[in-house]
Length: 192
Image (cartoon, rainbow, N blue to C red; front, top):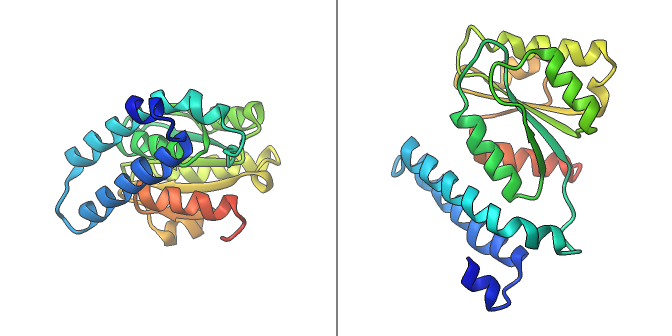
């Protein structure tokens, strides 16, 4: 990475061709059963390190404008963050600004962050079927504060489904980190 930058290779090109291209390969291997969760975690960690190196170069590049601001959170009463963390790393790599609120985040804190940050997107994660209902609570809080119309809501996690997303009024269900980035890109471009 540093060697490529020192050779004058543009940070955007490294991002698109090396990092994003590599993660697409990892995603295909995961879907085909060749890679497993530890492989995904190792890949996501490598992307995180690469993004720390690239970040100053990407922000300096005039032609790489942020695609939007993303709030990420694991919903209230849920302590799981592996999937959310992978999504966050990949969203950063795709050009989104990211504010990660962590785990066990109540609806009011998520709404506060959307107001404070002027977020365009919110990604909600839940690993347990007992906690996924808090995604619906979060959407209700956004409606109560009249924020729902200005933010796109993406949900994900093992117990969630497209049907559940429709039921609670989310804009999209994402089955994995790759689907989250693809969906966020389509929403940012107005193609959803």
